[in-house]
Image 1 (cartoon, rainbow, N blue to C red):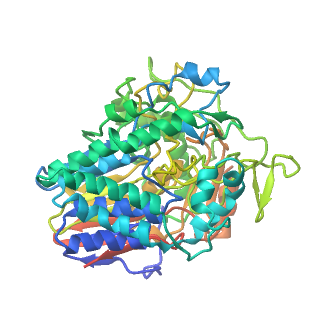
Image 2 (cartoon, rainbow, N blue to C red; image 1 turned 120 degrees about the vertical axis):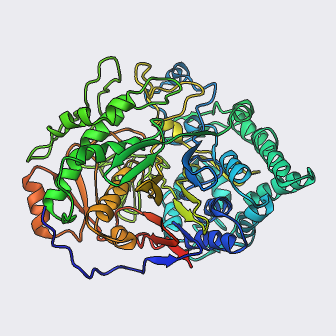
Length: 622
């Protein structure tokens, strides 16, 4: 694969470089808060908690307190990478039988039946307590201030609220009360406030400080307020008393209880890893889609990628065909290892992937082709939408900054047309995610992808100022599948932060929002950086693509076999060649694929970069 890369490429901004520390996130305010935390003497873990709470406030259409988060950390004291699993499990009442009695064959993509135990707050408290140095007040005060005093509403938040306006007015009045200011969609740039969320966090802080003692005692008191106190009580009451319209077209009560919240705590575990040349890449376990990125690399070992042109048809075709194979195995074998045995060692082995690699040919595959491992996994029938587009519903799914796919038939009476987008009666708009990476002067590293609990996932709980998440939609209602719904089980989340070592030394932290696309963009970034000589910013700015060949992780779990979405910056002759090879190429806007951020450490040097797509992300450092 000969390279014709421009030796002096244009980048949208500089790669940030310094020796003190770097912070990069999907919103400039959160980046500023994280950097300020480092400047005040906090470490990377303190800065991560402050950044995360701020992101909940300033990107409410992308994440919230009711959501979930996996976190990868490298702590210089321990000299190892660890995973903090902040993916809350299914409630005790979330049985397949219960959902089937409700007449469902899929977990709804929105509403209260889609809720898992909220995982974010407990996870940030564990990170702060066990890895950080600052007090709860130090890391929570910025978020409280922005929620109380206001922050400028970004364009995508305005667009999201506008899209679900009818849903809020007709079915979710508590959300309408918060997000429709004076009965109207708030304009871009509005100084938006959420005084109820500010009051929730302020009360947690007051009660924690009233406990006295050291910072660990106050953090434990805050945890009790959340999982055993007034927050859990409000969530329990809302789920028991409210019948909520969801993507199934019917109203349902939730099954999440205060007891579910009291019983759960985030766990620390070792990452799943793969050696790839000089690099050891670390991901979350098979309760996440993280290993699918590792399997892509295991497959791509057999292709001579050094010096390749990442914009060539040959490069894109090879990567996409490996994506299809890895994701087919994700759909067949992945599930919570606490409940099912996943053949992870085999899935990432050289022998297994050498055989799988032989399936990559000259032409694009239009089939789902999982491997066969005797005694493991189950392949389910996939749903293919009747038209060219995926169907969806309000809050279901997790795209990035590009267009939202909805119903194909504009003559369908259930379809509402809003600003040229065809929406179903629920007001179709899917949620997204946030991401950040932080490295401090000592070399501590954090990569985290908070998500869920976005404003359009379920109705706002009025006394708390936030809603619950919808991650349970990633379960299957099929008892024989590894990712089948079961009480206490983690759904196979699409959230997927990454840390990589180089020559045995912690080197790179990176990730992206984007649901199923996360581990496609994460892999592309890595390949461009490792094989094509691009720095962090160049690798982020480079044109990108994604496959929609496999079943979505989100309701209604449809696949679009052979579909390859590419940015419009891709050369016409490359698009023509990809189509000749059988790919169903869809050309998206020039800057629409992914919202990557990345940070690296190399000796004393600290580097970071952020994505121009969506016009929100920023990196800072010195």
